[in-house]
Structures are given as structure tokens and as C-alpha cells.
Image (cartoon, rainbow, N blue to C red):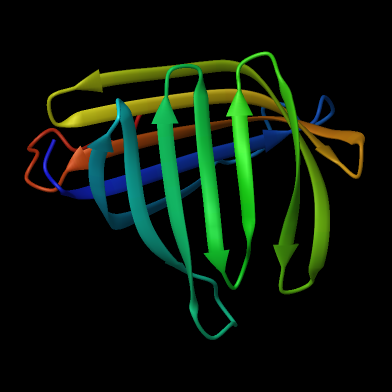
Length: 151
């Protein structure tokens, strides 16, 4: 894969009462990619509306584990490990939240100029179940003719 990539992230959050009623949230950003010690790294900057500065995002992919690290306006290190609950503090401009993440499924598909990721997980807020969620990522070389969001 080339160093310059386009990163598409689509997330869906729902509770039992709302299933099927929500639209996914989707963002597309330019970023950088590299592979080191059999791990994939994607780095991009995110602008949060209404706040000065940016948040640097680092996504680390390895077998059965996805790390998302944010540093800047918002700060968090979220770890998604299959069948394991991880707890982290998410510092936002509005205050800190205690998140619990229990990944049920992690699927990483790698091709020459394309990495697709899907994570299904349960999300807790302050030790109480909040929602069942999924996140899909498509990481593609900027020159790729086959750029599309994962479905």
C-alpha cells in the first residue's frame, strides 16, 4: 500500500429500541499509512467543529485488535480486542467519560491497496451498557481506482 491514503470511517450506534432507525455517521479524511512489525498504522488529523486546533488520530491494526488513539482537542486510547472488555477515559472539551469497550467481532481484510476493517462491539458509559455499535473502516491508496466505502 502507498503511504498516502484515504480513510473512510462509518459508525453505527443503536440500542434495542432504536435498531434500524439510525443513519450511520461517515467521515472521509486524507491520511498517512505505514506498516511496522506486522502492524498497520494510519495517521490523520481531525477538526472538531467549534474548537480551535486539531486532534491527531492514530489507528493501529493487528490480528484481533484495533487501537484508536486521539491526541489534541479530544484525548483517548480505545482498544478493541476480540472477546475482551477494555476500559478507558475519554477526555473531551466538555469533560471526561469512562468508556467500556467489549469487541464481539473484529474482521480485517488486507489487499494490495486496500484494507477493510469491521468491528462490532458493546459500549458502556460509566460502567452501564449504553449501546451495541459497529465501526467500519476503508483504508485505500489515494491512487486506487477502486475507492468506495465498505458496506
